[in-house]
Length: 270
Image 1 (cartoon, rainbow, N blue to C red):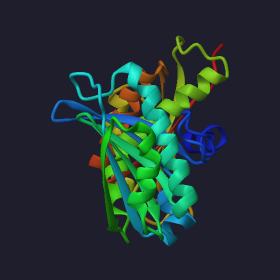
Image 2: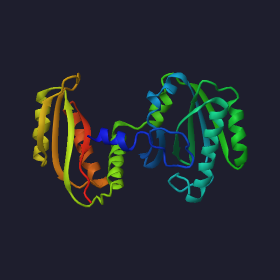
Image 3: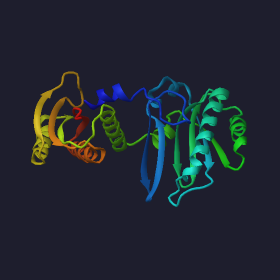
Image 4: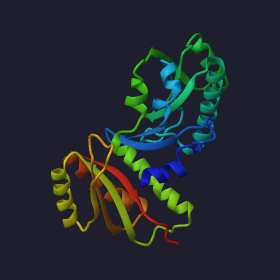
């Protein structure tokens, strides 16, 4: 299933940015808020890591970007400097305070960098030490106790729908890495779980009307809240836009029937 493939290809990958030097399950996504883009980069594994249990203070460094597009995102020729700032903050706060970098949030001409640490002593001093090399930028620092990781979970971490988009993109990227051109339709298998056999039957009836075939329906031992499994398939394209529409349709429909969409799998076509 998709989750297995993701473990093979993505979960220990480095975020492909010059600014991030630590291993983690990093990814990026963009959402629209009030018709303006918000760009988020986040370590998806931080919330379940040992560091999250130990580091209970959040340090947020908010940087006012100098040159932005009308939508509030940085212009291209400022990105290199922003990466250098990020790299400096990550290295500086980790060295001085053993702070764990968890991600950044960019919107409306501002970029916020999020760190978690036990030690927040003189954190403004350490931030200033880094940013003195970028004296034309203005910035502020917020420090708060955050026992429940609310800043990480409510600001940085993607919603379930955005997580589905991230997983779709990772799967498509993995296919491309294997040489798939993504142009040929092929059989795509989808996996779901439901609370009751009746809910599963209703869901299956709806998706069969949309051209999906039921491959298997069983009961999974050891699955407590949703033991009724369903394996369906349909021939579809697997480029990002195409598979995103299909998987999100199934994901949302499954919620209507108290089910859970677990992902998709397919084979490489060269």
